[in-house]
Length: 191
Image (cartoon, rainbow, N blue to C red; front, side):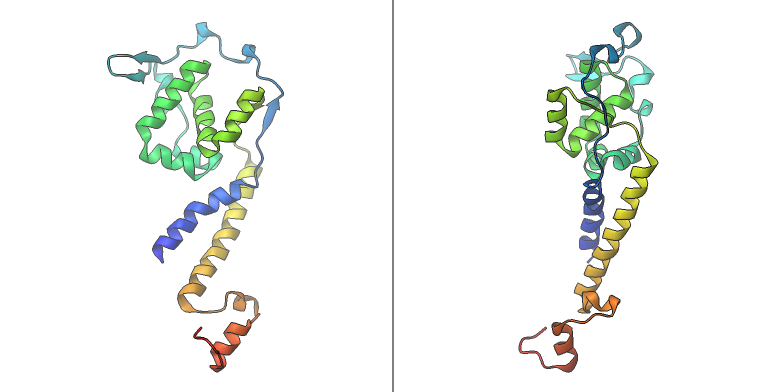
């Protein structure tokens, strides 16, 4: 039962994020919107260690938003990538920072969006559409929380009914034929 509840807790935020839309900011990405190279020190690739290294404190993991920011922005997939594959996630963010000349927060937001749905992320990039993955809106957070509570309540009720054998709709005062036959022991099959 605990495994089922854990699975439901993982699925609910993903399902609720399906109701949020991407935030488009402009029809085309302009090269002038990127940070000037003189003002931005990009991470560099260390060939000896075969990994990206930071060149300033503003590029390190502490400079970006935390794992909860990833969970709120894009759901459980980037969250679990940051928890269980922290080094790979950080390397991907540093590579994105160096390749696109963006700051740490923007690179993290882009990487989180990629981990959530690589196909949409790649489509928007190829079409030249800029999507604001970084901004957290109060309305989106509230909507996600409301949907999560609703889905988790229904899922919890379903698990409870599976474990106890109670009718799912009994909470609303409704009954079903199966519940009725089990109550009066008139079932043709074992319920």
